[in-house]
Image (cartoon, rainbow, N blue to C red):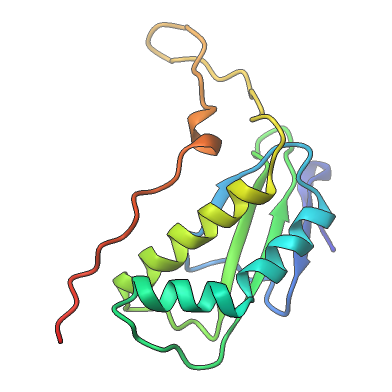
Length: 150
């Protein structure tokens, strides 16, 4: 476990705590904790997940890899987010793989996280009205459609 500034905690399951260099992250509820993080780690490293990503990625079989998941707890200036890292970083320079993993990751988090979205009290800077950010936790990215050349 890593303690960040302001009392935030980063909890990682898996060998790679470095989530830099990727864009796989999803807001989670306050009910999403270490138990759910471990469930997500297991789900992302399952053979069924590998098969789904392979199907979405033009049926390209991936070499051995492992996913790590990190929970960023919320703080005064940070939202509660779960992040994903693939080791080795097979996604670098492979946009189809990035989108396939992103889609499957978001689906897995949405299935595991059954708590309500966190309302951080954001306001529209132009109107001052409350911004409903719950869609960040309730919608999925579009299912990727890679242009596969045979």
